[in-house]
Image (cartoon, rainbow, N blue to C red; front, side):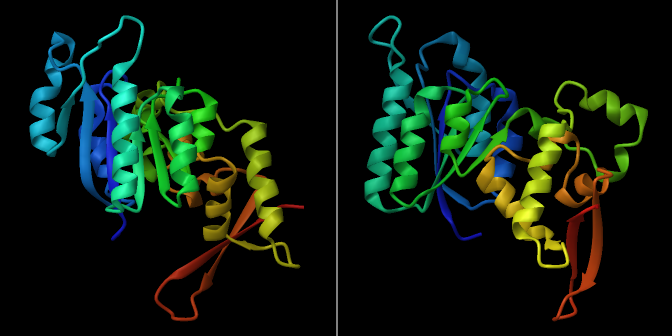
Length: 245
């Protein structure tokens, strides 16, 4: 993609172990032209970041904690984000944090026409999640199973810590989204369904439920049926889905 992105990472709030997978994920959505991480680098706890930053060309921004109990890192990220916004060098932002303090920033960036991706742990508060165009749980990036691995005992064991259960609430969300987009015959184009699901619930991601793509997720749910159709251009198969009666 040619969408230039600014990646701003809250170093106090994100585990360093996920950075490689996180940067690979961000590359799917655009070109991360600005990559900065914020923290007090005099703190020994942040020492494990050093090699990771060099390997991923991420610029560390020093922010001293001037006042006890106040998050200076948040303030530095907020100021930088607005400077970058007004520089008009990017079209989107990736805010990497599990902190709800960035909720207002995400809203403000979207008001300015920016595409906003949030990345954080599953403990991230709901207000920050819904303030983003898309929100990705960092836990699902560490282990990404292939679709045909999902039946194996080993695979299921690996996913226990990060895979969510497909609840009736999730199935109802998918069903209502299909209904919203369905033609008179009940069929809806799966690509449109995926896009609308993302708008309705920014943290919706098939990987949260152990599937790499939306198609196998839909196939696994007995309430839906899938149909492949020939593309008018003949190059690809088009996937359609509908609710079973």
